[in-house]
Amino acid sequence: MTVRIGSVPYLNSKVLIYGLEPAGRAPDGTPYTLELLPPSQLARKLAAGGLDVALVSSIEYFRHPEYTLLPGHGVCGERRMWSIQLFHHVPVREIRTVALDPASETTNALVRIVLEQRLGLNPQYVLSDSGLNIEDPALAVNAFLKIGDPCLRLAGHAPGWQTLDLLSEWDALTGLPFVFAVWLVRGGADLRGVPELLQRAKANGFAHADGIADDWHVEAGISRERALIYMREIVKYDLDPAEIEGLREFQKRLLDLGLIVAVRPVELPNP
Image 1 (cartoon, helix red, strand yellow):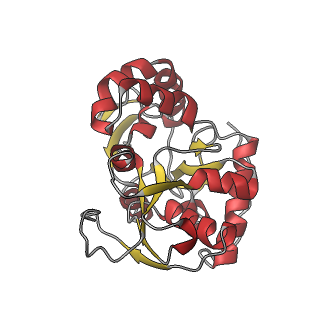
Image 2 (tube, rainbow, N blue to C red):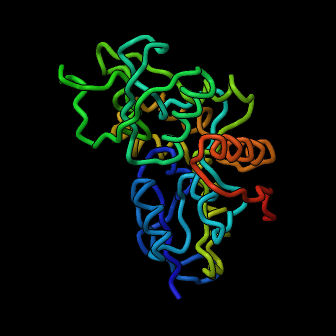
């Protein structure tokens, strides 16, 4: 049986899937396929049974009790995250309308946590499309969210717009790391040798960050040097006890906002 793997197409995932091909075999001979899609599309495909394991928004763990968490891996951050920014052209305290990013439910939830629970605001939210034109004078929002490589490309190239680093605000609110994405396994899926494959990919990817920066920094829209700092210092790839505590805190705040309806135990899985 072929194990179907899904991941995001962003620079922050290249370490985690280093060396994986569109089709290949795990160390034990298990055949696999790899598909790259934005987080929201991955989540829908995993839920529909079209994938067996996927790097998806962490909020999906709380929405699907049938999923299991693959230990040791994640896209996490502490104190700052260059690729998760809220762009605004009015002072933060005057934000009244926010365009969310359809690519990720987790970061949309993080925007609400920051604006409502950290800053005490109560803005209106709309779901933007990928064609949001920030130079359009008729743009009806005074803040919008961007994630991933599109955010990296836009930062510093949006005249008249300032940025709010949402992870910095989460850190000020909780003092905990934030887990943006995790590997989730579909209920009943037999991954066989794929967990070892992903563990090796992560170790090799971090060891070959220079090569990843050479290959991907232009597509990500940043310099090679900035890409290296991003992968080595900004993004954290290990799901350790502090990150698990961050997930627990995220769950509490999702419940407070009514974005999930049930509590799941959040424990550090055994490798």
